Length: 151
Image (cartoon, rainbow, N blue to C red; front, side):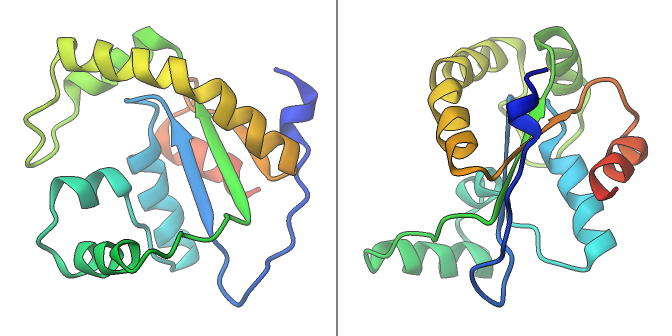
């Protein structure tokens, strides 16, 4: 792993600390974010979940914010969950999420290819800002991975 990905210069710009989490489908974003949110007693908002369920209160608040023409502010930290394709595929096909009718192999490959196409520019952008932290999310159990992020 490239050492420059692990150098992070983070100073909060407001009274709220905003963390973006990126990673391929099945990399553990949702699982680990829920654990981190419980540990830190903070809010976890999944853009994917919001887009799938535009009827809940949080989704409507985000939708109003976007419709007013305002952009979400830049994050204070970006966590990049790295995970190999085969492990991600296995997780993707075995997870049991309510309302996720799109968890099949064909959809996974399409989403993974899009992630592979778009991700390098995103990673480079946040690395250049000095706020990217790369986390290997494939070799640990969920609790161990959350603990490694917390340390």
